Image 1 (cartoon, rainbow, N blue to C red):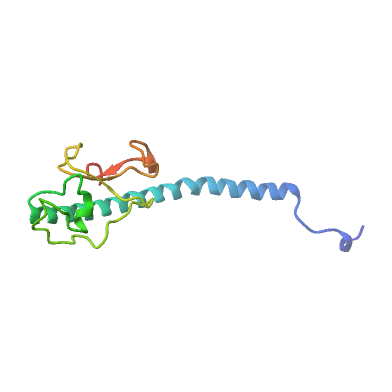
Image 2 (cartoon, one colour; image 1 turned 180 degrees about the vertical axis):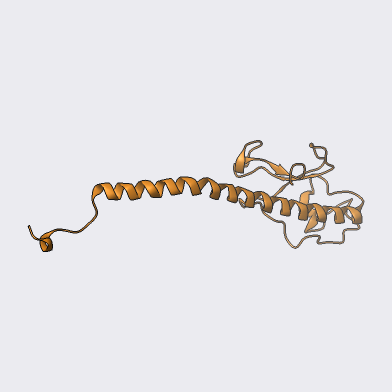
Length: 143
């Protein structure tokens, strides 16, 4: 058989070696990438909660108290009806931020974690508790 009639190409073994190398690289890069995504979520949540907390403090300065539980953080955008917001000088925010998963932040007055009021998200699962992206983040545990 002469050299011109020999077929050129990759063997099955060569292809398997390439696939294994790509899988190993993916295994090393994947966890680092997911850790960065979680850090970005935590940073965004912390910034959003601090923004809402600052607006709540301005609300309190004008009205001598935080919005009630029934008024919620919507009181930062639109003036609540009834007693307690006669000196409302808002809006205190242009719009209410959403958590990284598109859900509105939750509000509790009075707080249950040692804060007067709490602003928090329940994470991607929207259930109390959890780890990683399911973890509950609020003004009591942000950095």
